[in-house]
Image (cartoon, rainbow, N blue to C red):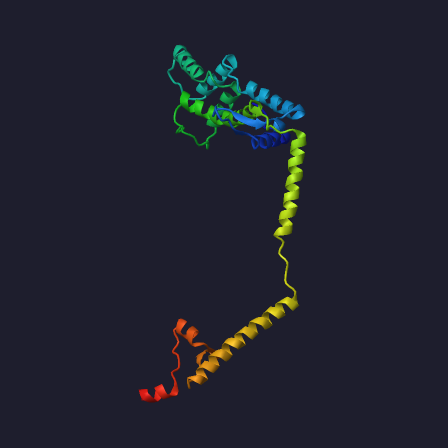
Length: 256
């Protein structure tokens, strides 16, 4: 059984997996920028781990796996079974598990021997070939997934970005200049207290002019001003917000 990946191999697998891109013509393969291809010690570490996993997942039918199967069958009740029947049963299991490594078969049988182990097998009699095969796949699946990731990285098709080191440096310098200009143009400056006070005074003068004009018009018509809250407002604004506009005094007398 292979050991779990080291921290370095696990980190390399995650780093280079994030640099892979979809292949435009072959969905089974990936592409990677030539500058990101694993080289040197990084590639050697990944290749070593790949070779270890390949060797561990290679099927090993033979005497050792047969002994493991005999141990399984012998641990279950086979009352009245002849040597020939037991031999046929062992051969059937060996044929069904021929694609599995011996360590996976041994681990599967060990798990199936545990009283509280939960799986598709209901625990009665002897687990079938399919039950043992399912447990073997449960053991090998994490290592098969790791091997697939590493092989995808090592087999990725490198591609050139089409830019030289000088062109890349020039592009970076140009982008830095653009960012500096953008910062200068979009800089938000706060107004000073004097500018805020001047704007408030200007708005107050405008409001005073509007109020004075509305008061003069109301006096000329012999009526009061429209009031919103405590503030006098113009007739036009009063109509827009749905307030009643005062009528001249002589018209009010006619109404009564």
